[in-house]
Image 1 (cartoon, rainbow, N blue to C red):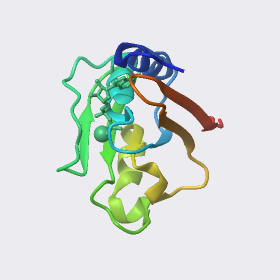
Image 2 (image 1 turned 180 degrees about the vertical axis):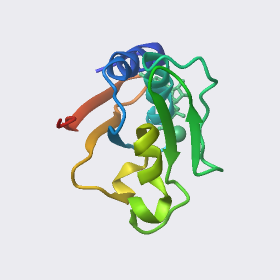
Image 3 (image 1 turned 60 degrees about the horizontal axis):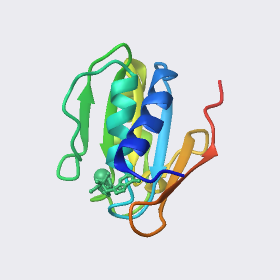
Image 4 (image 1 turned 45 degrees about the vertical axis):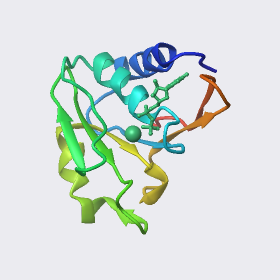
Length: 133
Ligand code: ADP
Ligand code: MG
């Protein structure tokens, strides 16, 4: 549970410190749940100093770091998509891939996190499937 954006960001940062090349993390949660906030922390944890913004109007933003983080947002992708169609396999060869609206991606092996809006500034973060490696 987090009570501020900063807490969600630091949860992301702890997670980002563990990231390795080839990791795929799907994040689900409604608009405003805190997905981008979490990814901001992930990028920090992965050693990036890049500005992290929602790639809602792009498909992907790439942050170089100790591990490169590709930040994907599938908000504009209607049906379920596959890794290959989106060109994500190449990004997984280069680093980690973190996907907002990750429930729209067919990737049964991926780690998955849900963020729930509990009202006010409270959020519940739940690791539904952890990284398996
Ligand atoms: P999403 O990417 O899921 O649409 P964002 O991370 O862009 O969500 O936005 C989350 C919004 O909610 C931000 O305005 C942030 O300041 C606010 N917020 C309030 N409390 C929290 C919290 N505990 N965790 C994350 N964001 C929070
Ligand atoms: Mg977002």
